[in-house]
Image 1 (cartoon, helix red, strand yellow):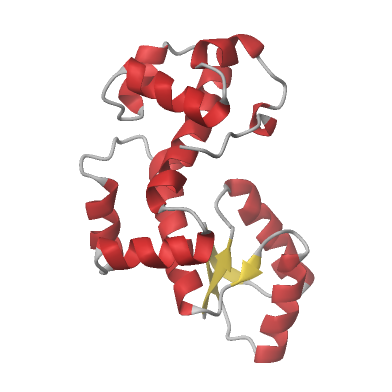
Image 2: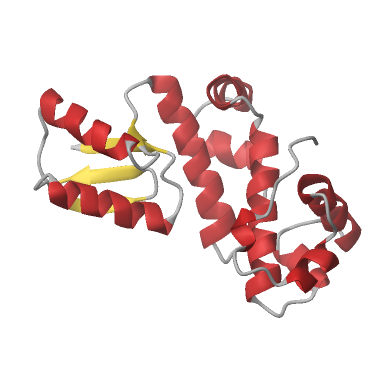
Amino acid sequence: MIIYVKNMICLRCKIVVNNILAGFGVEAEDIMIGKIQLKENLSNYKLRQLDAALKETGLELIFDRDLLIAQKIKTIVSETIHFSNEPLLTKFSYYLSSKLNYSYAYLANVFKKTNGISIERYIILQKIEKVKAMLIAEDTALSEIAYQMNYSSVSHLSAQFKKVTGINASEYKLLRLDDYSSMPVKMAV
């Protein structure tokens, strides 16, 4: 049985899900970002219990088709930006359409309806999160980060970074915050 989990977009989420499953005595064949392959089928009652436990951690099972599509989009974006070492050689719109077998217009409408922001905005926010992590964790030049993150130039990355965070990338790198993920995000683009 395959079940899908909303907001499960990082490796820590996988650990949380694994612990919750173990608490219910449910074994998973594989836990992927946003998706779990269970060894057995679960009753509706057990699924609802699992859903309630997941909701306590900010996660939840997906039963709605549009939410499922939106979660698949988030998973693809997250895996591509945060976990792939290969740069995306095509536009995200083409990539998402080919991976999910829907037109990009349809995907964009579903995503906006279920998340309240556009796919493009979500991609920008994820890229900036990755850039923030690279600035803090690695001693990488901004020009190298711009190249790795597929920005057309350092100035494009810098402008987008400042628009999202409110400060420029050089200032952010100097901050060397203990918890860079708590950095406020300015929502206007």
